[in-house]
Structures are given as C-alpha cells and as structure tokens.
Image (cartoon, rainbow, N blue to C red; front, side, top):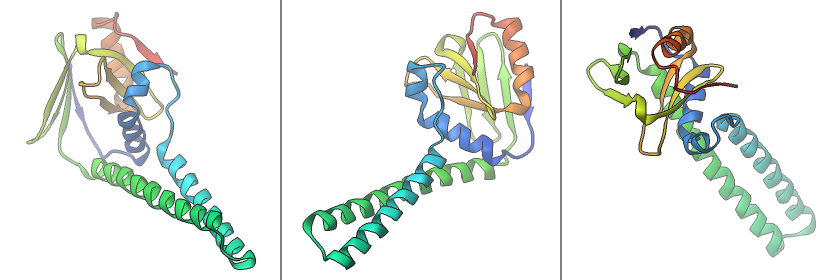
Length: 178
C-alpha cells in the first residue's frame, strides 16, 4: 500500500513528533506511558526560573547580597540559559519539519514500512524491527524495538488507512491507542 502524504505539516503534529523522537527510549520501556510535552514544560520552567531570579534579585537589593543568594541567582540564570537553548533547538526542529514541503510517500508492504522523501531520503523499517505502533492525538508512530532503529511519524490524516492495513496484513503487530 502506498500513501502519498500531501499538504503541510501542522505545528501540533510537528511538536508531537519531536516529543516522540526525544522520548523514544522511555516509550520503548513503557509503551503505554504518557507522552510529556517538552515544549510546554520548558516554557513553564523558564518562566518559573525567571520569576525566582527576579525574587532573588529583589532579596539582594533589600537585604544585601550574600553567598547563598548570589549562588542561587547564578544557578537560576544558568538554568534559564540551558532551558532556553533546548527549547530553541526543539522549536528549530519543529520549524524545519513544517518547512519541508518535499513530496513524501509512505509504503507499507510485506517487508515493512518505508518513508521516502523526494530527492533525499528513503528510510525502511522491517516489521521485525518494529516493536509497536503507537497512536497519539496528532500522529501515528512506528516505534522500533531497539535504540538503533528510527521512529517514523505520520500525520493523523492517514491513521485509518494505516490501521486498516495493519489489521489486515500484520495483525500480530501491537497497536497502542491511549
């Protein structure tokens, strides 16, 4: 079965796919585990650290600087920089996915699943290398059995076609819908 993936990718799909890519080892261990939203978590973390930095700065102004307050301020500033850098990188990956408008074809056959991008990549996972298929709100992901494999994420627009194919041709492959 060949599916030509049309249209642009939504931001919600890209964010969910990036979250799955980063949390793949955790999902391999706990297939039904909850997917954390790194984008929202990092935004909250930066906001909280910034608020604490402002509070510590105010404490320094009112009661004078001491070693503990200065150390905590430096630590908060470092956490803000690191969290912001990671959030920037995640947003950059998401933006790259959204701006990639090459023709993409997903092929499901008796050997496995293949994702081909026009003029660039062709990635194939054999059915034996796929541990399970996980259905998320915005994406359907083929999760590999080990960390050497590659996660393939497909938009929810093609969910029913893929699930119908899997039910008919590969009923032993676990499909997890949480």
